Length: 190
Image 1 (cartoon, one colour):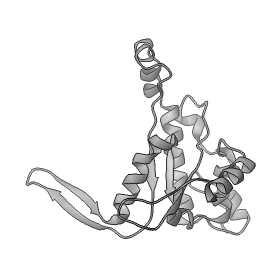
Image 2: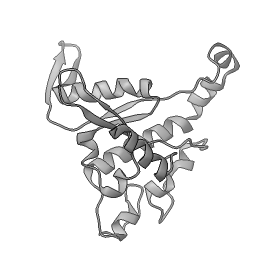
Image 3: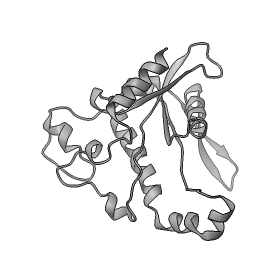
Image 4: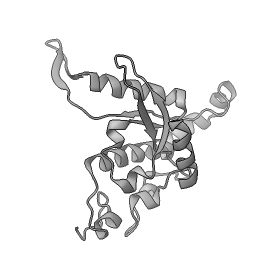
């Protein structure tokens, strides 16, 4: 383990002698992105504007993220004036389908079973099985998971800074209890 406690560190896991997995770090980045959207002052002013709330009562800005792991081919697509990188594979398509499904499941993040299997046991315990689905192009059903991003009362990015000596996952615990996540997961298995 390491003694560093910087904004990218995970002090609690380092004290336990375990390093976070790449999947732990990826999930942490997306949880943080969700929290930053909640804390963005410009977005809040826009969504809380009386005319916006009159047209769309209760509206709030959210972003959905689909997390999966697997191979992809990167290629340049475009013209002489503009070139964009593009990633092609069934794995990229699955991540895109998960992202699209966040709206249907009313969650910020959806993860494939393959991605969830790469999480450390400590972080996976913070996730909740949402459903068992069969995705287009596959005949094998798979579990999909979410991390229930807590509602943040932060009104600036500064308020989201990691607290010294506090593990990210302790500071930004899921909005659901361990018992709820366990019961929900058991129901999904039925």
